Structure formats: structure tokens, C-alpha cells
Amino acid sequence: MSSTLLSIAAFAVAIGVLVTVHEFGHFWVARKMGVKVLRFSIGFGKPLYRKTIGADNTELVIAAIPLGGYVKMLDEREGEVAGDELDRAFNRKSLGARFAIVAAGPVFNFLFAIAAYWLMFVNGVPGLRPVIGEVMPSSYAAQAGFVAGDEILAVDGKPTPSWEAALLGLLDAGLEDQAAFNVTVQRPAGNETVLRVRLDESARLLGTGRVLDNFGIKPWRPSWPAVVDRVVSGSPGERAGMQAGDRVISAGDIAIDDWGQWVAYVRSRPGERIPVIIERDGTQLDLVVVPEAVRDDGETVGRIGVYVRVPDAGQHATMRVVVRHGLLAALPAAFGKTWDMSTLTLRTLWKMLTGKASVENLSGPISIARYAGQSAAIGFTSFLGFLAIVSISLGVLNLLPIPILDGGHLLYYMIEFFKGSPVSETTQLVGQRIGIFLLLALMSLAFYNDLARLLG
Image (cartoon, rainbow, N blue to C red; front, side, top):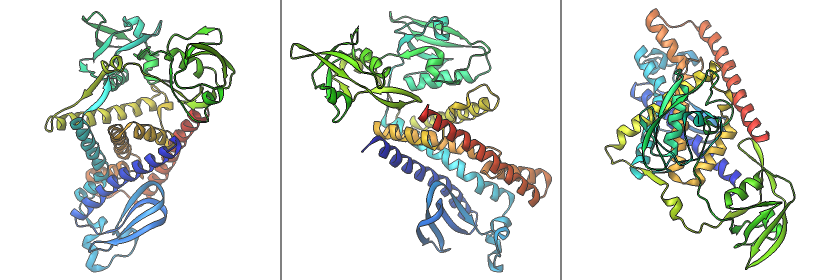
């Protein structure tokens, strides 16, 4: 399956699962509170599939536009209700019942994330030890005293057994208003030390670009000889005459020492003619390869469609780590992970709103589809982690006090609690218009970011 088709399929599965989880929360609690549910729809627009279920003849619908869903409940504000069913109308229920029904959608998103993380921790989450491969000169990392070979053990006291944990730790510390934070590292010689990272007022780890680049470090990468293992059919490498077993000796006037250097050379020259000397069966041959230009993380890079031959997996194996917990221990770990990701998402949104984090970090459906495809290609655990993060994002977003979202309705209910009477329909109508405007603005910004990453 091509990467585009995989991204589309993974995105469809992700949206389908997470929207179903969210709307099922509303549906299930509504039923428990005695509200009659008329329709449970996954997607909007023209129905593609329709079925009647349950004693209430609830209409189950799968619609054409898979970017959301809704649960339609019996409500006097939306149509006439028969006298014998008035007690089953949503608007007739107590304030507590209505609050619970509306809050159930986001709550189920968080519960799904907890379940996903629990399953991941029980099965084991593979990763790489956070060993630094390179420290950029004059960066925050360099100023703090980081050196190549350091392994990040903790950020502000929180253990970082993998690069994922280290990245989240740096993000968490970078979102704080404090000007400095501590990072515990193990030196290449084996001794541990604590480094003090100081950020100036303009420091933005969530600015334009990647967090690790902004911080000034690159992860360790294995050093492999520039030997070709496989050539993709129809690729620029095959057209140039490259074969499995070829060793790249030089490119242009530069000697190639390892595969990483060769990849960097090719990536920086999309569309250029590259004279290459390769060694094949003891004989050196001259080839010319022209890398095709492809988009990768918002930049145009060269790619020739050849894969490295890994001579010995031992070097890479020493860097692998698996984060695993027992059945019971995985539960608090899953709760903690969900809480950390939820607060991180909320704080990131706040920093964007206040201008202390770049709005370029906001992703729309195109980027989400790409991430879905990439995580699905890696494996089930990776895709499950992706689902958990997106589910948390949906939960947090829906709890924002924006009219038209669940959080907007909950805000109205809290006002009703203190006011003693419901918010007027006029106020709700004005709020709905404001909410639609804010949502359209947010979606437009996210879509613009997607196109900017795609087109550069």
C-alpha cells in the first residue's frame, strides 16, 4: 500500500474510532439518564448507511463527511414532543443530568486514552535511549554543557527512559514560565551530573521548527557503512544503475564515510545531477544520480530510493529500550500519562494564544492523516499511541468554553447553576455565532499550516 493510501486509511480508522467513542459517551449517559435518543450519527451530510436499533428505534447513521458526528436527542426546543414522552426530553432533565450527558463525550475520550496507554504499557512501548548524537554550537544545550554521548536520565526530576519521554520532558519544562530547569545526564564516561538549562526571554522551544532543534541537540544515530541493501523499482537510484551491494565511495568531490553522510548529501540536492563513485565487486564505477524532489516536514529534499545494509544490529540493539509495566502498575501509569498529555495540550494552546508558542504547531486534517499513516506503518503500538494523543486532543478541545462545543454548553450550565435560570435563547444564539466564527478561524489556521508544510 502506498504511503498516501495508508495515510487515508489510517486517518479514516482513527476518526471513525475516536468520533464513535466520543458520541457513544453522549449516547450511553443520555440513555442512563432516561433521555430518548433519536439518532446516533458518525459523520455529517448524506447518510451512507442507516439502521434502526433498540426499543426506542434509534437511528444509527454513517454519513458521507467523516469529520465528526452527533447524537440527536428528544428535545422540545427542536420539535414537538408527545405528552407521554415529555419526561424523556433532554430539556426536561435536571441540570446535573444535562451536565453529565454533555460532559460524557470528552470524558469518554480521556477514558479511551487511559485504556490505550494501559494496553501499551502492558505490551511494552519500544523506544530508544535518549543518547545525544550531536550538540549544536551556541545553542541552549551547548550553553548548559551538554556533549555528544550524554544520556538524558531526567528532566526536572521526571525520569526519561526513552526519547519520547525526554522530548515530552523538555516540552513540559519549556512551557513553564520559569527561566531555567535541570536536566540529569549520564556522561559517556558513566558518571551522572545535573545540568542547568537557562532560557532567555525570547526562548521558545515551541517556536518555528522542531523542539530538539530549538533546544540544540540531535539524537544518536548508528554509524553504518554506505552500502546499498535494496533499490526501489523505478527509483532514481535504479535509473542511475545502482544495485544491492554497491558501496558509495564519493559524491561530487566529497568522500562518503558512512550512510548518514550519504543520506544528508542526497537530501540537500533535490533535482541536481550528482556524480557518484561506487565500488562493486572490487571495481569502482562512475554513475550519475538525480534525486527526486519530495516534501518532508515542510521542506523539499532529495530522495533516490535506496536502503542501507545493516551489517550488525548489535550497535542499534544496545540503544533500544522497552517501557513496560505489570497489569496493575500499568493503570496508574496510564492515568498519569493521560493527565500529563492533557495538561501539556492545554498549556500549549494557552501559550499559542498568548504568543509564547508558535501557531505553526497547530495541525489540521492533512498533517493528522500523515501522522496516522506514519504511526500505522510503524506498528500497532505506535498507532495506538497516536489514537491516544488525538483522543486527548479531542477531549481537551471539546472542553474549551467555546459556544457550539461541549465546553460552551457546560459553561451555560454553570451560569444556570449560579443564576438560577437557563441562559436566554438570544444569548445562546449570539454565542453560537461566535463559536462558529472561532471554530472556522481555528480550522482555517490549522488547514493553512497543513498547506504550508505540504507546499513549503
